[in-house]
Image (cartoon, rainbow, N blue to C red; front, top):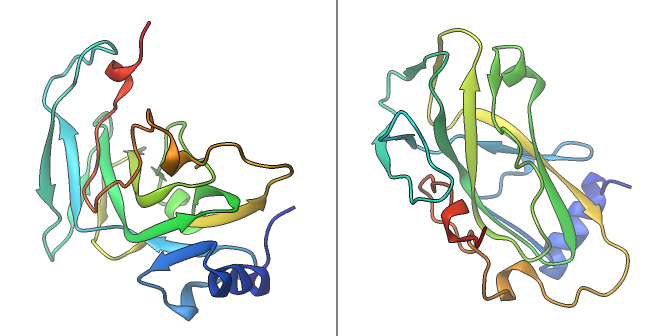
Length: 178
């Protein structure tokens, strides 16, 4: 089951879903459109290591846009800060984004109940494409959960991405024990 527009509005009124900034025109029949923030990042090293803290370099998208290149992995961020306290949020690309050959997440489209923050986007493209800050980039859909949640994501001591800022955040895989 996916929440409809009226159910999303009801949950926002109850405070279980928060979207800032919120624009009614971005609410679809069963999703909410999110926009590309002004900052992108790329990894400093060409070879990444899952056991080390891989550093990133941030840069702002200029007003005239920025051309994404194939075979370059970018981290982006949503303009919107969201909180989801009683549902599972999923971030998917918009069809218009996909038709430009842009993927906005490699594997991490699902959030956890209790996620609070801006969404980091894992961006790649099929051919060079110019993007702009503020452009619609994806859509959030919400699924109800069944059962009691013992510990929400924002209450976990080991939640590596809780409270993400409005800047892309690099992988925190290195914080895991393996």
